[in-house]
Image (cartoon, rainbow, N blue to C red):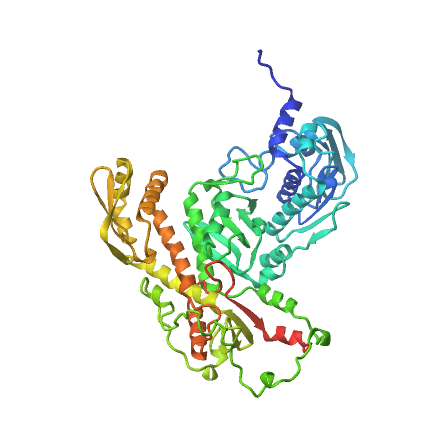
Length: 606
């Protein structure tokens, strides 16, 4: 088969498939051009999810007739010269406009601010229709109609109009967060008008426009630097989380990106603080020397590659964890808002019917629990003396809570979590603070305290081990035995003592005390498989942390346990000095704070 040169139109249509995947891709490219032109006001109008119409208007620097003629040609750009090592603009490839023009009906009208008149150019299916003078305001208007009419195969794979419109909305939101000094307006026949007024240098105010006003009250500021890489932004407290990762925004040198490394680092930073299936809310901006990051990985420019990815990941994880340790233990305000919404103001006589008076219900008779109520007679009680139950105390070190003074002597203003005033339903501690009250889930809170104590011991010194009366001999392939013995010292620090027992066997002499009775054979075989695949012995460490969390759950004070005032206050004081005490090991909140102003609102006093 003979080789032949493809036509310019077909080349452009093939290239367009990489740059313009859907209407949102076209919107992104056009908004980037407007921002690069210095626009402070950008208006986006759509119809049919952007398939029928996509119009982007800006008040940027504009173009003259010569610029317009070059703008619709491939690889023509004003943003770079001869190198890709110093890219400081959003666009630089010179492919967006010719790609759109090859698969849609494209018209551009533009006028420079210092020009008396403007010009207009029109392209359809890659063919120039006209280039002529036009009456227009300073700036540029790009109108795209009938996207993919020239490539019907691509048109068939687009999603519904609603889904495509939602994708454009997401693009606008990301651009709005990155450029708070620009006013964005999104409108059209398929949507209600969405407007983001400019907020100047107040980035948090712009984030509140996108993520909701609750984000401002639940965000922790991030500001860190490592080896000339700067990380700024805001991260939500762990209890302020969402059902998907759509509320995580990342920017590199002002460019919105959806980079797997950054998203993975965010997920790792919040490990063990957020429930499974929930996602943190974060807006992070990385500033780095353009020569140290490659933004030319894909024509869509949403992926980047860092020269030192581990440096960037370490910076993100370390900065977020430091911020959470500093200010992340507080409860999310959304918990109090949900609590307020659950109240029904006003008395409803039909909803409450008092029981007839009997001697058994007389207020003068003290309450006695029924003999069958096992909450007070049969439930095993955890001890506050050592923070863990007797069985757990034998397996791991635990902090000792100093007994506090009775609740009557506690001054609420002295402590962030206030002074304990009551326990309700044998599980919730009600504490009075200086300006409100706090409701604590005693089991969830104590569970976190125990886990943190055990994890601290796990990482600070060699874990205690238990010697097997009879060493367990495990037959393994010789190569697996060799791999395991390479990590025998590390495994020993974790409480697992192994020795070689001939060429094809391992003798296990000690196992971690925290594991209790352990299936040594299964554990060793799993470690051998992991070391063969990843060349690391981290599997045991991860297993121990999981076991520590499980033991903490069973070793903490249980629901249904009645606490004395000094025990409740001791728990509150320990929470105040323990990192991550705002959520349990499963990521659920351990307490909810209700301000006095919120309480007064319930009774119409404010």
